[in-house]
Image (tube, rainbow, N blue to C red; front, side, top):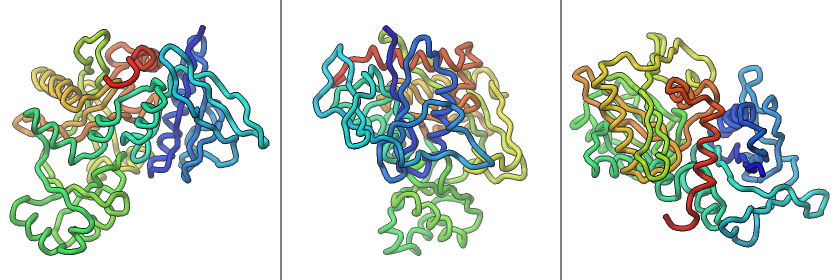
Length: 371
């Protein structure tokens, strides 16, 4: 009997379109001789609908990302808990009648950002005892919050970029005090970023203190909690991590490097997804072998320190003197065939379709309930 996988994508965050493109990539590559697939889209308003499983419906068109339309049949979540060893019955509301949709073995939440990657959906799936791909509630929430990530990693002795956390209320009450603190303790340039957003949404580089107000406003549009970090003179590398099999240590890739041209200040949202500027990807990164191995070890340790499961992409800085610092950890990284995470594993000999199967198999064999 084949395994039935429900792909959950779209969602309420600003990364809705990227999530849809990720779903398109997986729908095109998943081995349908091994897996039956059900596509479930979440509209921007939060409605769950039975969506098309045709990959061509979830591709970029004329530079615009696809969206989940609200017109599909509404998916009804089960009202009773799934029992270990049993499938979960999903139903839809069609023409005023409740009809069976599928018996699901594993759900894959391909959601980026808030209301999906941050532990909210994971908590619901835990209550249903429905196996799912990726990290659990606490790990997802901690890794989504860049400030919480830094606390956990520093407690484990892993170095991160220096900076401060600023809440929107604190900024409203004392922007001048925040600016003065930064000018005294943290040299320019600064990177201003939402604490709980991904894909570089709301991120700005600040070269002069006078630019801080606009940068903070841009970040607060995504999240009332914002990080202001020192801009390091460093190269940015990324390492893929997969959970080990049968209790083994996490598996890591050789790190890759995204190189941006002089026409870009940094690797921002438009550069990542809409072809802005000059960007190239080197796999492996052109660094000494000892540095690459250290980065892999730090990625493995970060995965363990945050209590992650399934998969992660650990983004790091490498300074001129070869110090390795963690920038952020993504528990559900971009997953198109051209995204860094699958590309890194392809370099390790694990194809895109095999990577998908690995993650589904992990989720299907995971113990339900508290772990």
